[in-house]
Amino acid sequence: MPSHEEFMIEALSLARHGIGWTSPNPIVGALVVRDGIVLGRGWHERFGAAHAEVAALGQAGGRARGATMYVTLEPCNHQGKTPPCVSAIVKAGIQRVVIGVRDPNPVAQGGAAALRAAGVEVIEGVLDAECRLALAPFFRYIRTKRPLVSAKWAMTVDGKIATVRGDSKWITSAKARAFAHTLRAAHDAVMIGIGTVLTDAPLLTARLGLAAPDGASWQPRRVILDSQARMPLDAPLWTAENGGPIVIFVGEQADAGRIGELQDKGAEVVQVPGEADRLSIDAVLGKLAEMGVLSLYVEGGAEVLGSFVDAKAVDRVYVFIAPKIIGGREGVTAVRGRGVDRISQCQEMNVQQVRQFDQDLMIEGRVGDWAWLEAEYAKPARRSSRRQKRSAGDESAAPSGRNAGG
Image (cartoon, rainbow, N blue to C red; front, side, top):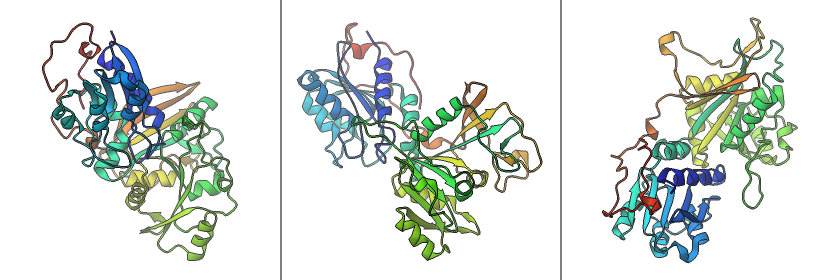
């Protein structure tokens, strides 16, 4: 008989189908199970659509009565764009709800307590750490009012991202670049600076975009940092097929006429404070959060990456390293900015994984304090609302392989 963890793993897999489509809502997956058989599957498909629990109940129909529901995030207990999931669960006659992680949103939380009050058995904390990590952008957004920031760059073994003449195509292999496109598609927005626009003329599309059930292809917002509003009106990204919306951040002193021209081209232009040619990263992140951006993928160039590092605004790093040497005093290094004076002032990266693509390596790591992802409560792992004798034939009574901490 499958365990709690195995069913929760499937629910997590379902949840990931909603990446990009649900923001500023979280991605959530749910299953309705009886006697080890999945009767209904669902995930939150897009913002404003039915929640995962309701979708799974709809597929299960009348068979849901007396069954167990597995859901990656605590069911909501408030009226938003859709009715409370708690009400739907109770009405369907679900006997037991197994929850991955509690909802950090004070507006929506309280579902576990409401279910218990209605006589539904509730088990919490199953794959808590895994569910929490899958929901990291949502936790970051809810608890700090800013997006989760991923910084990505591809460099040679001597730390260069371009030659002295600015040539950078291509440092890494086709396989590494393809994976970078999947990373783009996994974020709400992708960002570059105006220097990269002028030098590389990128499209900023995710060529391996995520498809919705109706066949639509997800594309992240394309965000440009352009303090002086120099964005060319004939840049390729204006006419890129299936490109995401364009957002341009400019300085408070940017020319009003140029701002109007960019708006006429269809861009959303946002003025933020800054110093000289450096926009305030905190202000940019605050505005993106107001737009409902939960995750941001910063691709460069070196000055933009340096600005984010200087502001200590990077949460996660993806570094692709190619077995090539460019050399040269004037070769472009990956991260510029102001930097630090002493090694003791360096920001340290906690390496999460290392992957290989042909001869290239990718290092993924966390930077800074991730306390916002941790539990703000004493996690009641395996706690249920009533004691029941568990039989070997009950899938919800299967032994736990581990008790994942938050």
